[in-house]
Image (cartoon, rainbow, N blue to C red; front, top):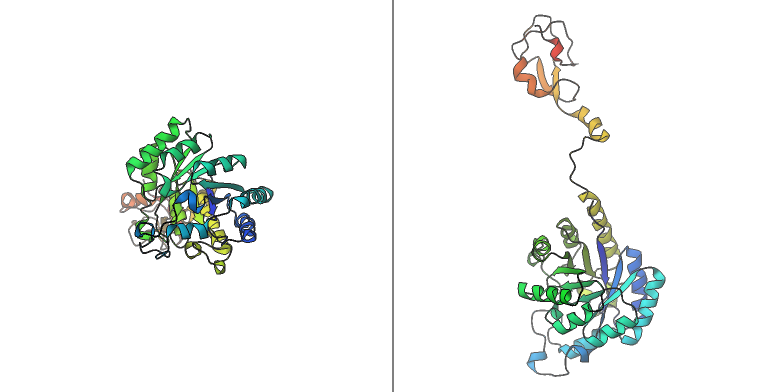
Length: 338
């Protein structure tokens, strides 16, 4: 039986600067059936510098093109003074709350709040000092790989393990917002598990809910998807996030897919036995007399399954019936003259 998938509602910037929206989003995430809600712990100053040259200008075919990094992050961040209330409401609602730290001071804050998990974002997978510091806290580590090469993943995992942390989940991720489904390459998921010996999952930025369903069939144990209370709220991440109704449908679809995975099973259950009565078998399909030869006109393989196995047809052709039989009689080897 497949292990229950851990589903994360990523709030990111979808509070749009309003703590009430943030708190209402946590309550809504709980209603969707998500296992956890995740926020991001950074400030514009912990991520970058306020510089207006071209190095810091976004120009890569995204919804944020034309903005400078500092301005985007200043608009999108979750104020640190909100964190305690966010964690409190999540605890009140009975949903796990954790965060992506973007520097050591963020880890320190999250330690004070007793965050149970640390998530390293795709663009931080090369920040080995941050990974080392977060991993040293002994909490489960989830790392996204949207911009990672194999050597980056290897080094990040090695860093966690050297810090004494072996509870590692690597998420397949495409760092585009939204991501094109043809760029998802979800077959990487089972390869990650085999190649690196870690748990695997998907951080999905494609539109819709198909990616997570496919991912769990390929072995994903964690699904992360951006969540917004209502797309009318707007904000930097609204355009590729699922609203409450969509996220609820995703969770439902994932749970159905989990149940469908089941186990390797060739057992003949009572249900299967009952259904076998509708299988093919050999029947007498014309009224026949004793001594009449069996041929393909008077005995056929048809439904239902109360006659002998169709494999006997070629063996009995040319033999004779030992009695009169009516059309619709299930064929038996006992009906053949010796």
